[in-house]
Image (cartoon, rainbow, N blue to C red; front, side, top):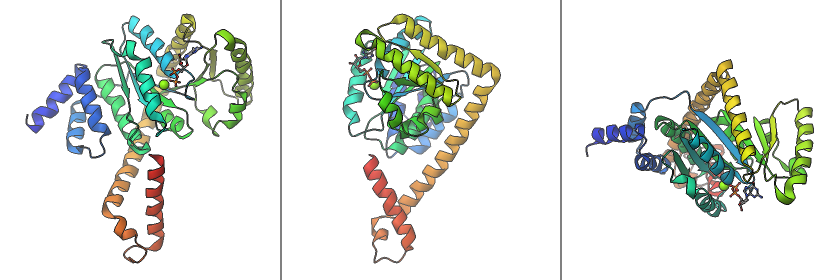
Length: 318
Ligand SMILES: Nc1nc2c(ncn2[C@@H]2O[C@H](COP(=O)(O)OP(=O)(O)O)[C@@H](O)[C@H]2O)c(=O)[nH]1
Ligand SMILES: [Mg+2]
């Protein structure tokens, strides 16, 4: 197939919601050596969608994010809407296992024609995930998914990333994690629009209620009107309540014009990120390890140290 035909066909099939094309294109977005020309041309043919709902879902491993998303997806599809889940996990190398577990936990819903589940490969470094996820959101929107959930393990850095690319941010919290409250990275509690204290069932019921009271106080002191609720994937009415809070939140944000402002901010962030990313890429391609050799005086010492720092950062963040 010639290049232009391939571009048009890819865009057309994505817009028609063909999962195989969506998957193949997202794989291209996640490649280290991307075909930038192909990618930008396909995007030229994809419509910009404004009425989708981008929701970030974060929380510690095991809190029940995937299970809850599975339940939310079931509910959304019974409402005749399409939903995509992008699972982003920058906490690798430990993450390989958790993504695999996500896949198995979401397997029943992933095969539904109106649901698309996509785990990001853990081999991607943080910046790569950042970029591919933003673009994947746009692909899913062009494919007609009304709800886009971005699931990420709460490791500090990732909450800020997800918050910067979503309209609404949901934090899942474990019962009786009062000690963890102090351990939460500074500023993380500033981010969520909704906090769900999950696993409000069985033996954990009482401690979940206690945690709710503690968190209410915390948010009261912070003067934040973050929505707080108790949830359990085993309790259908709590899942319905959560979806309802999300829907009302979107309606309010849409009607007040806040959503428009959020999207504008997301675009500005994206632009900023792309500029940083491209410059860095240029810089790294321009200078190689040889240039970093102390005996080479082609580069000032300060710059050498800086690049060494960047390279060191990347090898540890992978
Ligand atoms: N009791 C209880 N267990 C849950 C609930 N949601 C998930 N789990 C269990 O918690 C474990 C981790 O769930 P998972 O959805 O993979 O968590 P994630 O790492 O946050 O995505 C699994 O064994 C689930 O069966 C819940 O609402 N109540
Ligand atoms: Mg998960």
